[in-house]
Image (cartoon, rainbow, N blue to C red; front, top):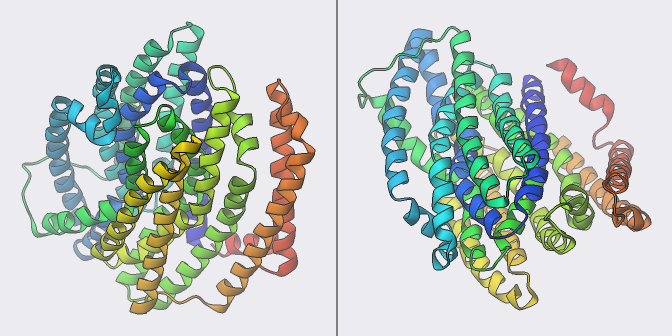
Length: 521
């Protein structure tokens, strides 16, 4: 199954990026803590980072990849090259205008993203950090464009490697700041500059990769050709639908900005649950769209259905154990990874509570990534946008309501995380029901049986993880990091072993099944 190899390639590099990202966040926690300076930087980074997730993780490509693949099939490689060159010309003009406007109206953007910040003295420093980070937005849009070309040409590796470069640059920047003993405000300023530099490095690396495929992109005067108009028509709802998870998080940030520390606690929790979401959901979504587009363009509906079933199997196999762990042992995870420097035990407890709430929504976020490509491959971005709008209303209302409900207990951020998870499930269910009603998806017997096995294994994991965590309680609360790290390693290893054994015993999925799938590819 070629899809599995592509998923492994994207997932492997994504795992490397996320692990480096945790190293980055550990350094951020040590350098900035979880106070006003950290809140200011996270809000500044939120806008370009939102575009990174929206564009680099598939929303832009939901419109571009099917059109680019169809153009190459109908007009040959030369036609595809001409179409891509036209898109690049339009993209550069649009990005230049948008970035310039964003730099001018930065305070308004901050008010829209985190209105609570506009009420205190933090608006000035947040504006400064944001203006330094903003060019990263344009760079990530170019990275998404180059990634779409590479993925369509079946060159997944370099596009998946690009986020690694971001974390390498930021880790180097933070290491220098800590070594020099810079104060949190100066460290955040230097880190903002590192974000800008990282964007340039990523865009240049992917441009070179595209050149090595033999494509020669040429700039020209932007013209509104029929296919460019089609791209815009598909792209606008595609961005809204493909990035609904991220848009929901932004809504949470707006609400969280009214409580001190809530933005930071949500950020750290978001980083943790984004690890499995990035490895599984994003990787499958990125690899699945080109595969479905090629199959459907050839009329291979049965092959597309089979591919969806197998993609969903692997998504559930990897997501359910991760969700179970986040739900039952979030505190142990957060303490081990973040509790050091300016980040204390109380911060860990607050982050863990939000992480557990996110854990309930993790399977839904992955299902969105699996189901959405089926719509996009059929050049339907409107239906997912409608579903996204419904879940958006739920998320905004839930974030406000749940946050106010839990604020007296000091847990408004937990209510925001819970609302995000609820909105994710509503979106996933709507996507699934829509595909079934249209006859575009049907679960086969193998998927149904394996899903039951995965659920049983996840339940067993929750029981075992709770027992192991209690047994290693003293290690997690030890003052040295190595004891907590070893305890977490034992916890993860033991829980994973139980999940694997139950999957094998139930016949849901075994090592032989995985190896057989790789051999077929």
